[in-house]
Image 1 (cartoon, helix red, strand yellow):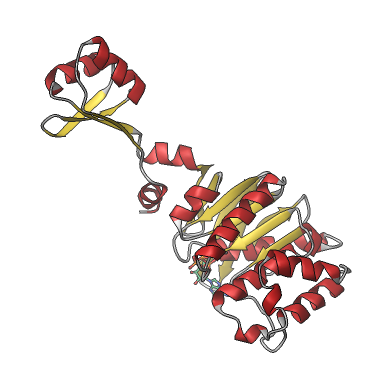
Image 2 (cartoon, protein in one colour; image 1 turned 45 degrees about the vertical axis):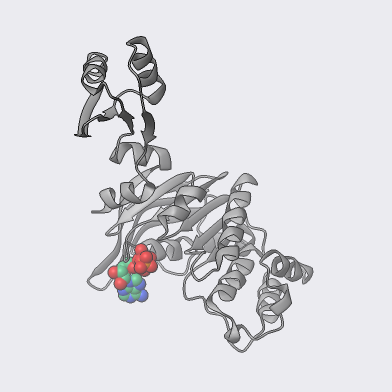
Length: 292
Ligand SMILES: Nc1ncnc2c1ncn2[C@@H]1O[C@H](COP(=O)(O)OP(=O)(O)OP(=O)(O)O)[C@@H](O)[C@H]1O
């Protein structure tokens, strides 16, 4: 579990993180979203002990990252702009990490395999593409088999195979009962991978909620109905408490009743329907609305 309490980070006159509090629970994927400069990377860096908070506290399983005896085995992180020695091979880089953390050398082969870079393990990391570098960063994050995994923009630079791999990996890590915090700019990616969302803007918390709740909150679900008897159906729907609007003849947009209820009402009144389509805002629309 990750707990962030009243976290503040100032860089001179810039307040990157401004009193942020949230909890990331195990067993689910928490998406960390926000516009550029919202403070996501800074928050992740403070959680993993790479930046010192100006005020407040970030705890992993009840302790600061650095207070853990074997931090790499408690939390693994992929953060932007990783410092990998460009002249070292992927294997040497991971071996160095493993040995300084008392992990067996054999673990390196396992994570190289898991990250799909075993075939390039002896190549210098400096020659890696952005996507291969991401895979190496994720391999390093998984090295200590940590219960908490923090990934900053993991699909950045990955090809479609890589995106699918990260998506599956993230879901599996959560299904294993791990705590997973993932930042991304790609709403479509978050919509399919995240269970829970923490959304920040200007260093402050904008929402701490589920994907479904956020979409419902920002843009309530509606149902599009087409019928040759729009006037009759409209009055029947209104008398059952629905909100009805119409943008063209024969088409109604209905809120407050779901599609099965509308279908049953129409059937009871002997009204023919040509279309009955539930509509839901996309996560992207909900996010744009929230961060406007
Ligand atoms: N080392 C630093 N020195 C000065 N300002 C910084 C530093 N790191 C971050 N900032 C500033 O803090 C703010 C938050 O940056 P941060 O990188 O945490 O945002 P982000 O949400 O991760 O953005 P992005 O999605 O673009 O990566 C920005 O205004 C950024 O310019």
